[in-house]
Image 1 (cartoon, rainbow, N blue to C red):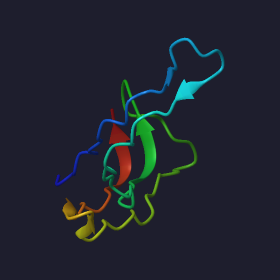
Image 2 (tube, rainbow, N blue to C red):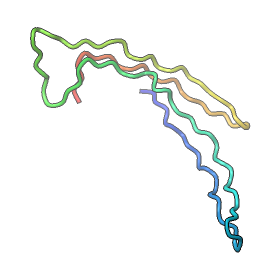
Image 3 (cartoon, rainbow, N blue to C red):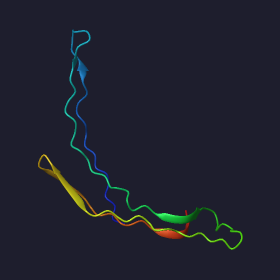
Image 4 (cartoon, rainbow, N blue to C red):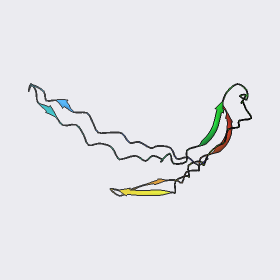
Amino acid sequence: MNRAPTVSAAGGAAGDLAPGIAGRTYPGGRGGRPGIAGSGAGGPSIGVAYTGGIPNFINAARPKAGTPGAGADKDSNTFQDVTWILPASDPGIAEDMHEF
């Protein structure tokens, strides 16, 4: 699969009390750069998920998967002369039965 990790940046410094002045504080530092994250668009479609042996079905019933989510296209954004690139994501899987 072609999954992009979520990238975070450290935030700004915490605020602090002003020395010797009750109730006064110093402001905190500036926040960090924005991160990137995938869309989660390529979600799976699984009819029945199971663990520990194939389940028994009654009356000849059979699970049927639907249409999985489509993957997201590659995207990019530039902010303050920094460009973040979000690689394309794979589409979800479609399985009538899935064993964990």
